[in-house]
Structure formats: C-alpha cells, structure tokens
Length: 309
Image (cartoon, rainbow, N blue to C red; front, side, top):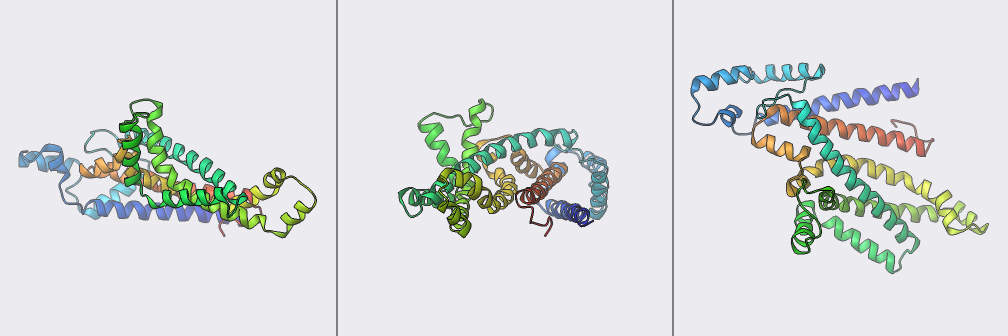
C-alpha cells in the first residue's frame, strides 16, 4: 500500500502542478500588450471583420470563461487551434518537441560523458595538475551563460574556422554547436558533483579495507566506488535535465534551431495564445516526468531510499 500511495501522491501532485503552471501562463499571456486579432488581420482590417474573428476565436468571452473552456478542452486532450497557423496546435507542437528533445538529448550526452569523465579523473588525481585544470575549466564553463557562450562558438567554429554549420537545415553536424552551448555548463556542474562524490566515497573506511586486500584501482572504482558515488550525481542530472528544456529556449533562438523554445518565442510575438499555452504545458509535463523518473532511478540505484520521501 505504501508504494501505491506514493505513486498516487506523485501523480496527484504532478497534475496539480501542471494545472497551476498552465493557469499562470494563461493569465499572464493575456496581459502582454497587443491584440492577436490585429496581429492576424492587420491594423487596416474592418471593424466588422475584427469583431467577427474575435467571436469566432472565443476572445470576446470573459477571461475566466476562456480559462474554463481551455481547461475543459485540455482534459479531453484538445490543445487548441493556432491563431497564426490556422491549424490544430498538437501536430505543430509534436514536430517542435522532437527537435527540442533531439537537442537536449545531445546536450545531455555531452554533459554526462564529459562531466563524469572529468570528475573521476579530477578525483583520482586530487590536488594535482589534472585536478586543478579540470576544476578551472569547470569554473569557466559555469561562469559563461548560454547567450554569451553560443555566439562565441558561432564566431570561432562557424565563422572563423568554418568547421561546423549553424542552421538546423545544414545536416547532422548542425546540432554540434547548440548542443555544446547547452551541455557544457551542465558538464561543468556534473564534473564538480562527480569529483566531490568520488572523493567522499574513496575516503570511506570500507574502501580503505578493500584496498588493503590488494584489489586493483580499476576494480575498486567499477565495483565499489562508482555505483555509490553515482547517487548524488543522478539527482543533479535529473534536476538539470529538466532545466535543459528551459535553457533550450535561449539556445534555440541563438542558433535558429526549430524547436519548442523558438516556437514559444515566435508565438508570444504573434500573440498566438493557444500555441504558447500548449508549448508551456509540454515543457512543464516533461519536467515533471523527468523528475519522477529521477526518483525511480534513485530508488533502483539505492533500494534503501523510500520513493517519494
């Protein structure tokens, strides 16, 4: 019963958080100056056409009535109809979401492979040259925000050296620069977390006892250190993976990547309320699912952990 209650609590909490997020976005998006009808028809449109389209889109109703209609449609799986594209929101969102997940997945691979590898090396060579160099690189990477690091990568590798393309339509390699811009700051955080965790485990009495038995360093790392040191790293990566979705908004805008972030920015400028609301909903749900999966993975790695505690 305890596990079922925990899962049920997770689901209810996720549902409440999702409704709160989309409600806040719903009301805030309507506070942005500008009229979506004017954005659609233009400033020279006849008043009769403006009022007719406003009634057709339901924008003539009170804001609370619009919100109730939005939530009602959401419950039955209807994400709405785009003002700008004159088409259902769901297929457009799905296409952009795939591109965003493609980008964040590549960034996550870079972050985990680089961060964990450097963290282990730094821990094994603590207070030596490799450790100091890894810590220095991590500090620099964490200090440079995406909106600065992205243009630097473009100038160096795309403009000056011409090694890599910028636009998403220029082949598979076009993902390298935005993935680096998005993933290296997380790699730096992962490296520092891995280093601290490995050093802490290496100092445990049972590790000293295992070393006294004559086991090799590689076997000690693989069989005893890495699994125990991985627990706080998994938690950090799970939380940061959700944040990558938010950071992708800026990165996609810089590199013209046709993902969910770019779609949100464009939809806000066009006053396309249904598209903005649905996009934020997808981001919020993705973040919640990632956090739930992190809890489950933490439980798998350490059965002593009580899910939901």
